[in-house]
Length: 145
Image (cartoon, rainbow, N blue to C red):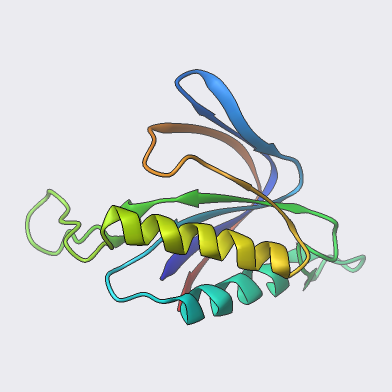
């Protein structure tokens, strides 16, 4: 399981021109699920996302979590995180989990982030999403569990 976690001022997610989800200050998390990933990995990742200290404290140090700042999480499924470009110029997605299982783990991960005390908005699994976000920093962290 791989996540790209971005600290944001706000994010808007739309599908077919309609706003589906939006958050203010918080984290936009792009989640990739590979074959063989399991619920225990989703639980560890959810805990890490909820407690990742990448927001600045009063001294300008990255010392606060999204919970500490009262932020939200926008969780977006992104199988392309498992694109393999090691051979040729066209990525292979052969290690990405099949859609039914990937969607189940995506939903489970969202539930576990909520269980860690956070408001979680979601994208639309498998949809052609358009995402407009204002990155803060920018701060982007890659987590792989």
